[in-house]
Length: 82
Length: 345
Image (cartoon, rainbow over all chains, first blue to last red; front, side, top):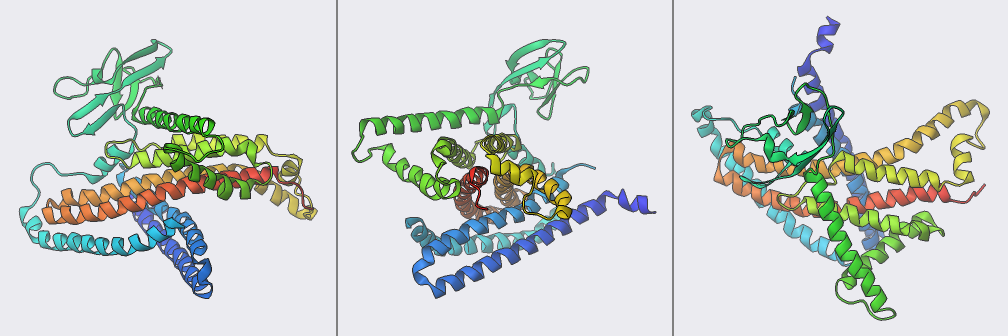
């Protein structure tokens, strides 16, 4: 019973899909928090807006890569045979 | 801060264009849905995964556009036959079917002996070709920049030198100097090479018909291993003491913390490798998947929408290309900076 569940490939594909969805949620929360904090910082100190924006973009790029992990894993699972 | 200025104004335009593109994309999808269902499946089915895989993987054939192909040389070594070199066109007959040649067979760009034994493949593949092209471009540009420094010493930069000088200064003052500290000069040549290699590789990969050079995990692994070697060879006494002895930590915690520190030495370059690989490869996958929608739905309207969205994503990819080069160089210099830092205890 347990073995048949564990060996089911369709479940693995489903798991990959759900997992990459969770990754997207996490990355969304992360980027949202960065964006919110950066907006706040820029509103409090408009003269530092340029520097805040540059730093924000770099951190956002780092988180974006995490979201892209989801894309790559989904693609690998979807294209692997069997 | 001109980049910020450009980004602010371009982001407004980009938003509008993106919205129009997405509108067309969905319009097309909904319009086409009934006819697609009525038509049923006839002819050969378009497989987007196959098309994407073909574009992001390395290959022995450089396909410039449909039907225009450059067959690259194959260099293989096996114990039985020794070192051999021939063109990869030998693997195809006139009707484009794959055939075996001289005892070698190629299956999905993987060359083996007919007996099934594996061979060592040193071929000039598409990625290797683009590695050469990338190096060639870098040599051309930076030899001329270096010549400019010698000729215009003490004077304002001229020609191509004036474009690259601000970038070189940026890498030195914003990335390398703050992260490595006073001993930065020794590592500056490596960091500049790293930055420009990744940057040019990323940009080169965005051209049509170009290879996915920095989105190849072998290429990023070599870059990460170089950083790993340089970090560990320039590590001073404090670095090793910190990693292997964990000073100032209670004795009971040491068995946990020391393995963590040692694993950390390897996870740092590993994260560098994965980050660059994923960022570039996923960018290509996203672009190609959106483009594939035009072929999946076989409609001009979807094709028009997809083309607009892909153009916008391509502009984002140009930004990502620069940011990834920046991030890789920054983290490399951060790790080296941690290894050469003086003790503060």
